[in-house]
Image 1 (cartoon, one colour):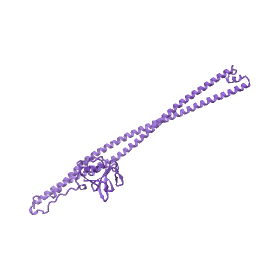
Image 2 (cartoon, helix red, strand yellow):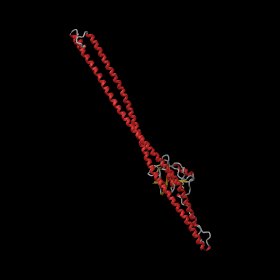
Image 3 (tube, rainbow, N blue to C red):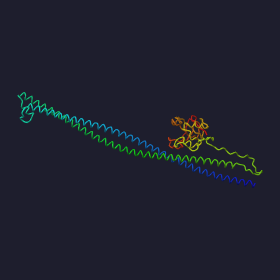
Image 4 (tube, rainbow, N blue to C red):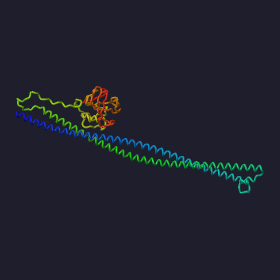
Length: 396
């Protein structure tokens, strides 16, 4: 009896020691999970900021393109206006030449009249031409000729001068228009420079956010690897504790021997009832914010290089996993490229989609998922999906 008491005391001490170690491991694992949650929360915020920064870059790109178009339009108008100014200069020069020619004709007419008038009496060629008429009929004829000649010359000179004035006004108008266009173009170029500067700042912000997200992803991978190690260590400790607690002491006196057979340690409970694990399952190699990243984070037994969501079924089957159309809690559901997700939305036409099954209810499943199209890219985003048997499931 005394020996049994001693053995019981020793077993209790060992059990308490193992329990204390297990408790410490659980606490450490809890701290790691808290760090993972904090990391994911910070990454979600960074992703939201990145989306905002990218939207700003796209907006500024559009504004810069608009300014480039406006600058090109202004330059085209300046070129057209300059061509019009040069054309008007040619017309003004032509009109000046016509005016000079008209004056030359008038001079010749005066010389001709002077010759016909003969010696000057009054000093006025026209008057002398009239006074030197041979008779009344000649006088009337000469007077009519002088009047017509004067009127014709006057009309011609007025027409040429009017044309010259109008052309000069048009030229001045075009010069003013060109100056306005040049000023407008200069303003547009200044505004474009400011937009380019803003876009450069937005690009830098976007790049910095990407760097932070990538750094967070690296930290998250390390934390997940640490969590996996802690989980494995905790399970090993609990298995040892269970084995020691159920073992029968080797030196128990015959009178104290139990007739009950030693209990067999219970098999560990695993997701989806299986223990299969990919040979390439350590960590999480998928990009944060993708559906594959989220599923790998909640189903660490999945492979790191199974490809796009729509390829997971084939990749899992190649590794010996059970793949069928029977839904089960803890399984991974695969949606093909372009496949309808319960009639609510459609999986990407090239990449498909994957999610984690958390409940099965008749012909419907409840899934949790991640992805850039959701309010929380890092997940979980919960959705109830009908038509359960129409999808592919990967079982552990």
